Length: 458
Image (cartoon, rainbow, N blue to C red; front, side, top):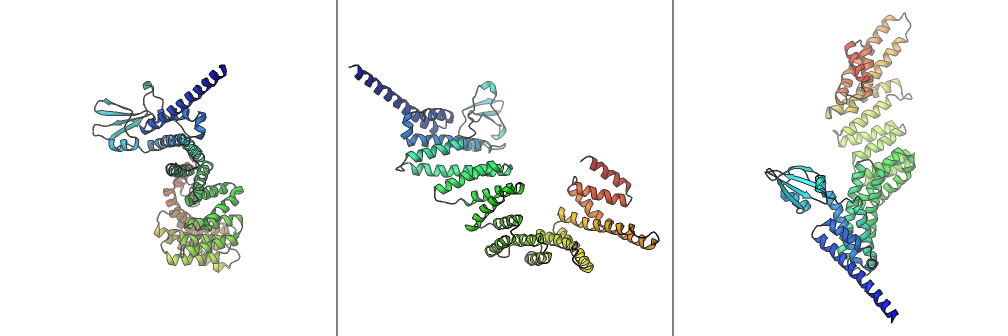
């Protein structure tokens, strides 16, 4: 008889626990339906702690839904801005928890977000702030809500072996994947590549689970690895592998091919880099970015003549493309310094570089690098001539005077371009140092004093 009573008490205890589980589960669903996420969260957290939750897919789906909405609510908070109408605010957050009047304004209180929105007397958002602490509101802050939602959905899928809930869960997980992707973009823009990769990885994993390839998320991973490889060569092979994967799946993005070619160039494997460029040309015939990348590969091996030939093809297709025109100028600039060439050839390339930079500036009058390089060509030439003049014997006065005048003439030619650079980037040290040298050599005392002051203030 005593044993029977104990068994009965145990049955009653289990039944009571199951009843409480159902009560909390239903309370979570009811609160979620009413957009009361604080109550929904409290109820579902209690519900999933019961042993009964281990075999109940629906309660885990509820948890996923609730935490996903908590995450989305925080995302929506970033979207509210001054000038919005009440309808637009309600469209974002539904109705507020409470309202009050202050003069001609209406105050909207969103407790979960700790958000206080002031609507002006003309029905537009005037200010956005926090609810005063004296109101005693505890905001709903769950920084990792999206991760909790994902894990809850996965748990629901594991339990739901017959996939009765799949039509409800699958779209939600796809939405979660999109949120991970958005977070990846945000972290990438903040230069936090590790966090960006963690989020892109989750998006890729979710796509794989659905037998799909998320090309953009994979591209995001490639971009992160490329950035990390720029700072640490240990990531070079991983970046190459990811970009190679994008080439293999034929992603239609030119930068995939140019980035991969540049990574191979950084590794010193120019043959593979060239092969990637050729593959890119097949997919994007006539694309100038590929041509410029190819030219840079030639430049890296001092094959400047081939670089010029490649760039001239691009110039024929896009005669006003400043990137192409500038690259031509840079290539000629390098050729003029090639000591293996004759003095006559180098002089020819000196003039060609000047012409190419001037063509660049004709298209874009504020193209800083082209303007600076043009000034630098004249500046360096002037310095070179003056230094050679200073090496002349003391009795060659006439020749010295002639060379000094020529050198100063080059400095005068450099001056307007370098002064233009200063207007574009006033704190560029290279520009200021170059101007200091010119002002000193041309005895421009007031300008020299001015530029010295600017340099001391950097």
